[in-house]
Picture 1 (cartoon, chains in turn orange, brown):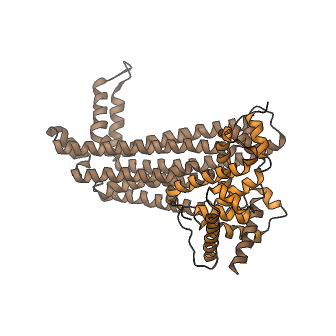
Picture 2 (cartoon, rainbow over the protein chains, first blue to last red):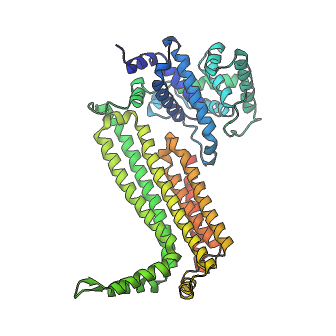
Picture 3 (cartoon, rainbow over the protein chains, first blue to last red):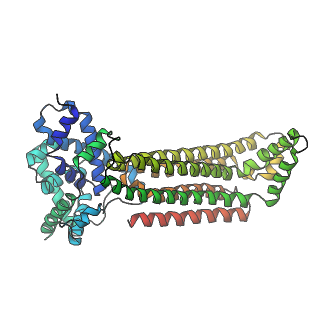
Length: 183
Length: 311
């Protein structure tokens, strides 16, 4: 008889790495992303009984990550009062520096991308990260965001447009967290 | 051009975020929260070193913040209380004890309490309360730093895995204490001012009132001024609490104790500034002391904020 823990561990194994990078992509920093992922896992484990189809685990887990992220975004009003930002710590561990993949140029590019993503409303950021970073299909993103395919395409286009404006220097400041989840 | 740059940077972000992904077992350990009793491996013991250093830094910063709070309180208290008053207190204290009978002189004690409570406590209550809160925070920070560190070393296994969340727990507790402390202080100070206002309005018996007037200076407050002071102080601490509370859920909060403490110092200084601004400090010396306190707090706050932003 498989316990809930064993089941959860088994289901998580194939999607763990991508879920971590997805959560990190949504946040202003890797550590925030790791926190988001941890919180999403706690919530997912508590609700594991509600998952009927094991094959839909990835979509289900990503949807929880998105929900937790939106909750954080909505509650971020209070963070306006903080005089500092937690972003720009792309290199959180010593092991990253030792990695062959790492270089200062790579870190700077990632930092720039994170700043650009931070200018997007949460829903657009989710769509961009899932599509551009995670390489997901539009219909899968639609299932995770619980919207139509055309809405996802709209979010992708608007997100791209806003990022383009950021890169062209039309947007210089990171806006406050978005409360209204416009598409 | 920008499209290419966006694609390139997003790819870089994906590559970099894929580095240093925590192991699934570690993450699940944080979810399930047990396995604390398994033996500690060499790797885990080595991983403890950064946490020990982090805790040492945390303890040092806490000590610094506590010292700042206590320092401001002591300076204000000493500046407020004339030296002759200290000598008077000591004299009363000595006289109240009869070494021949080893008994306390009740009459003298009552005089002591009367003088402390009626003549001085009103005027210097804020300083005393700050001092007591500072001592309590110092004591608590000392105990927690030691206990956390020793327990962390003792049961290292799962604490390495979910250390970040345990740090969050510790910080949550710390912030809760800080908030409670400021709330208590704000309440006490508010009650103090309200009481003075009440006394002023209802005009207590003349001898009682004269003693207040002669030694407190708080009677300079009118009813409207008192209300404004109370509101300012309460709002100041509410604002400080609002700035602190979001840190509870933030993983990087360990690095931010500096800012948290300097925020606390700033809140205390603002309270004193409110008193000075409303004419409670009736002499130039007191106003200078209050101004100095807030200047120090602002500098500390700015340095702390800049340092955190540069991380």
